View 1 (spheres, helix red, strand yellow):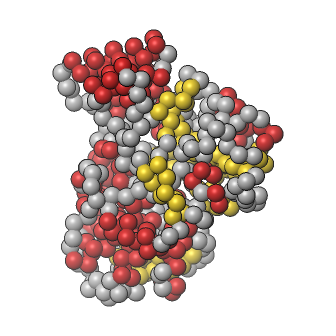
View 2 (cartoon, rainbow, N blue to C red):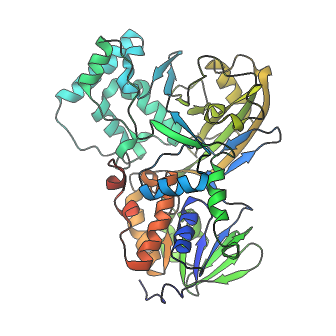
View 3 (tube, rainbow, N blue to C red):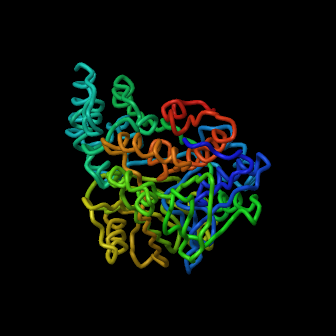
Length: 466
């Protein structure tokens, strides 16, 4: 990396006021520095963690965000931002398939399947336990080696295609960490024998959610804590001149910098720059788009949904892969919780899985009726649709090779690309991970501290709080 000016005198530009950009800005402010500017294309902070209120008074997030954490620093900051304005929930996650709800994680609760399919899944689990361990070459091979052909066929492969919008064989498996429950065959067998549901697994088996304002309220409040002169809204980057260290924005303005912390999608940043040597590599990164559909309904959620948080949908009769009972997260997510409730659905999209923007709401409503999440489309009083062009940073088999080329060469130009799409590491792209990527890059620049979240995701996700 080229020599940088003294950190406290450097002009630090931060692109994006989502969790990562705000994390970096907060840490700079915490260190007593004001030599930075956050440039955000929207008129408010939040990025992919923003929230919206539709014309009928329903609040929506960009997907089913929940607050849980791997970091004491993050927890302390969240406590300070909202204080007593948090609601706490025990996770109730389910899988809807074969016309029934199955508790999550699926593999621990296969007793709920039709008998023939349960035996097929169990047979595959036994074969995995008896066979020699082999190093998988991709995510599908990991699924089959870990869970057997039965679970792969009935749930894991079709569900993961619906989520990622790419075949699991195109994905690596190194990102998995805590996100997929490991197999405990004895536990599964005894669950079957004892007719026992097993629902306690997971890092987010308890989570919290803002009382008001949706997830976006967290990030609006963090932005309010920053010096107003350090925030520049309505500034969309159009071109990066890394040679002259200049940023060109869509309003015609040009700003200089010494150090750039970018949370923009890595492929977009490189494409709209003079970094020609990196463009071929960055173009190899793959991602899916996410369509979020909000459905506001008259009445109250039925008994089968009254305590559920979210549900997974592996089958093809629903376009969505996940449904969140968003009114269960906070009564203030609807105009009046005595009269209304809400569902939020996510539909993935890619060149391999196209989605009709004109019909996605109609298809979602049909899926809700098919899955019996609603009884009558006439109960719908509000619909909302948001398409996140960059929804999931796909951990393809070749992703790490690309990142090993692009990120170090950016850093050689005093450009630090971080965050969900800045670093393109899905395994550390939750809200807590993203904020801490911003905090840790500032710590590194300030005193050489390790960026543990970016560099060693498996340690961060191993359990316990850092």
